[in-house]
Length: 210
Image (cartoon, one colour):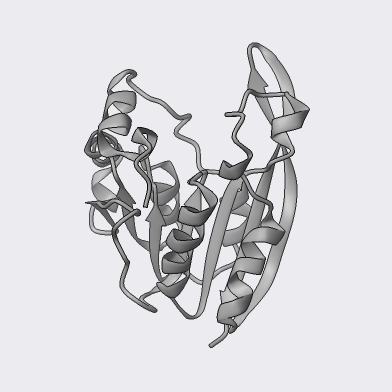
């Protein structure tokens, strides 16, 4: 779907190998807010990285499959998994660019900050949506395109890698059978270069109704 090296296993293995930890280890706050009221079941995370979100879900009672293109990230996630959660989380190496998850198999499918070119994103996210069982939820959290102009935190100057929650929701409309509960640009305070700044996330939560 793309020959950009930034979307390859080699790129991400090298990036994860460059540091003991890339991310904070805390669950994504938008994911926590959107999922906290849902009944636990089977969950699939695309792009789990070092595993913080999948492990948080497992602690809430979900049975989670965390997938990532980087084996280095998955090994690190496995190392972060406490013994009491070992039976609730499965770490699986997959490349979302050429992998289709099982259809209608999960009560929750989610991804955070999985930024892809628009033509690739639509195809990949359509496959993730198909993996949601009736009554289940799709949750997507991305950096909002307004971050490109606000300048609070540097983002790649490539608008095609960014989209709004409305655009994500509109991609579901042709398929039908969805109720959109959340579609917004949500502000979030982060620390960048020693000072607190505001960034924005595109947050989508949709329920599959048919």
